Structures are given as structure tokens and as C-alpha cells.
Length: 566
Image (cartoon, rainbow, N blue to C red; front, side, top):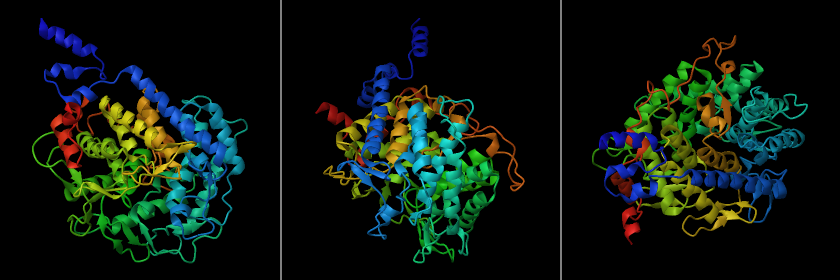
């Protein structure tokens, strides 16, 4: 009788319920993370929407048409014309209404049709690339080109999944702007012996005379989604062929001993001037785009390169016990290594590496993704942010600032989509509460200059609205079209949605290797291409309490149970 009753109750209780009560033992982690009510979810959904709206409205009020909002002084920011060498600003800000452009598809995803159409009209009116501004090819591609393409495809989608988003008299203006920008980036690819582009280009004059001959792997190798989509929309091979040539060149120059890539390469000689290999800055999105290029375009060569790279990364960079949720030993961690030997080269990880869990989810390696994410969650709980660089040996930040980056939020979203575990709602709520408590200002959200003192810097980068707020909103909006049809979309590395569309997966006259449209694996429903998600990871804690506590102690965070008892 009792066993039958148990089964009935187990089938009835939703995933966000109190299933941990059936374990028979009290656990502080279960007690905190084992449930998340529908009321709480809706509250967080509204808070995430309000966060975006607060930042967006203040940008439009105080900063538009400049590129970014200064959320403390309540004014706008553009290129640093007084100091052309200030690449921290000038690589990103090109006097092209950056924050508005970068926010377009977030407006659509949130169903704000009227503001989306208004924003598109303002972009068409104000954005002009015919200016003598020198920008980074990578940043202009992921933030501007990718957003223009995403918004154009949303407008052109006749099924109107986000509502009626087509502005009156729209005539492909966003696509024309994307084409104009990409054409101005092409000179970066000329004059290099390897085909790997210069890192910067002047939008009027081409490559600056003083441009360096070095670029990072991610900066050069993260162009294939945006350039590929543009080529296929225009039926013009030049853009995709440039991007693919870069990937092939980088692949050619990887270590013939370890198979690893360095983080900085000479674009003329192909020699690695930076021999650190890792999952963070300088390399992160290169790996991501190998997999996402396969998903979007169906090119088997991309998948082959990704699979080989993924195994090489695991072999050389992974430290700690063999399994995330089983066995003894130190918690798993991916470290930075020497590309030539695979030996550990330093003792820090950075905030960009937090996105790796999302890539692991797309690849179906869910258990590994859970463990990688848990490390960053412990760091977040310790500081209320992810410091730019964290030293896992000294258990302290090497670089203390946090510019509202989205990578940890992104992985939280993908892990919830894969497991539907309420644990990740709690993570999302912690993120929202920390951002509102520590970074919200009179007219926006500001960069944390120091995660110890909580001192702020007067800058709100465009990715806060285009990614951080978007992923938080999607985490809690279970009925959003993007979540219900997740296998139909790929997120760019800037968080812009691109449809997995037959148009992008068909054989073209200029690309004989392209294939007919085929379905894409959805890790939530198809187990043939991914590790099965353990029952515990779905219905109890995704990671056993003993291992969560071990992760907390590994970053110098007080044990959770002692906090409760104190």
C-alpha cells in the first residue's frame, strides 16, 4: 500500500516541489534548493523584465544615440576620440548606437512589439557606418552584425512567434546595414599571409597603418555564424569563405603534439606568441562556434573539429576526480595549460570560462556541465559576482572587477533547460538579488570595480541588456517561444538568436560541402547524442550535497550547513 501511494505522490509532485523529503534525511542544501514555487518563479520573471526595462529606458533617456550609458553620471558614452589608443573603449564603441542595436532581439523575445518596431526605426535612422572610427573586428561582428541579422530574421519570420514585429514599410534595411558593416570589415582579411584577419579596422579607411600583427584565437575564429548567415542571405560566398578560411588556418597551426591552440597568434607567420591554452578569454568562443556552426549550417567538418578539440581539452586541461557526482578526490576543474606540453601554466580561471558549461550542455555532457557551473556558483556566492580573474590556488581574485558579464547567467539558463531542476531558479534569483543590491544605480546598472569593496565604475556595457538580462528573463519564462522551440534556435556568442533554418543548411552552388536540411539534436529529448541526465540531477540536487560543500570549501566559502547552524 505504501509503495503504491509513494508512486502516486511522486508522479503528482512537480519538478519544483519537495521531492527531497522522500530521501528520509535532512540536508541543508536540499532544504534551500529543493523547491521553487510558481509564485516565486513569476516574481523573478517580473524582476528580470524590470531590470532590462530599467536599464533600457535609462539608456534611451540619458545616452541615446551614443553607444553606452554611464549609469552613475546619467549620460552617454561614445568613442574616446581624445585617446585613440584607449582600446578598452574604442574596440567596442564605434559611434553606431551600440546599446540600442545590441538590445533589439531582447525586446522581441520579451514580446515588446511596439518598442521593438520603434527601436528598428531609430536604428535605421541613426546608424551610419561611414565614419572614421577604428573598431575591433570581433566586437563589431558579434555585437552589431549579429544583432542586425537576428532582428532582420525575426521581422521576416512569417509565423510571428514573438508577436507582430514587422515595422511599417520595412524593406530589408537591417540586412542592408549588416551588409554595409561586413563590407567595411573585409579589409581586415587582406594582406595577411595566413588569412587570419587583423584585429582592428577603420570603418572608412581599412586597416590602420599602426595595426599590430597579432590577434587572439577567439577574436579571429568567432566570425562564422554571423558571416555565414550573411553570405547565405545574400547568396554571396565572400563573407562565409573568409570566416571559414580563418578557422582552417587556426586548425592548421594547432600544436602537433597536444592538439591544443594558443591564445595569441601572429597573423603573418602563424607562430603562436601566446602559448596559454584554456577555456576563457582569448579562446572561449572559438570552441563554441565550432559546435554552433555545425548546428546552424550542418557542416560535418565543423563537428569533427569540435569533437576532436573537446576530447583534447578534457585530456589536457581537466583536473580533479574522474566523475563530477561520484568518487573521491578534488572537485573537477579545467585549468590553463601550456599548448605545447599540456602542463599547467598558471593557477587562475577567468569569468569568460563560465560559459563553457553552456557549451557542454549543447554537446550533451550534462554531468560535466553541472560540475563546471557549480564552481562558478560557489565563487558567485562568495563575492556576489564573478571576479574577472580568480586564483583557485590562493582562493582569491587576481583581477577584482566584474563588468556585469553574462557567461555565468548563460550557463545557468542552459542547465535549467537541460535538467528542469529548481536548483537553477535559486541560482538565478541569487544573481538578480546581487545585481540589484550591489550594481543598481540611479539610472542603470554599473560595473563592479572591486568585488571586495563593491566600489562601482561608471559603465554599463551593451551586453548587460543583450545577454545578462535576456538569459535571466528566459530562465524564468518557461512559456517563451524560444524555450518551447529551443531546437529551432542557436544563440550567438553575444546572445543573439539565429534560427536553425533550412535556408542555411541547403547545398549552395558556391559551397559544395553544404548539405540538405537535417534535424538538430535537442539534448532535452534526444539521448542518442548525449549522456543521460541522472535522475538525481533532475529531481533532487543536480550535484550531491557533499560535493557542493566540497566546492564551497575549495573557494574558501564557509560551509553551508555551518551558516545555517550559526
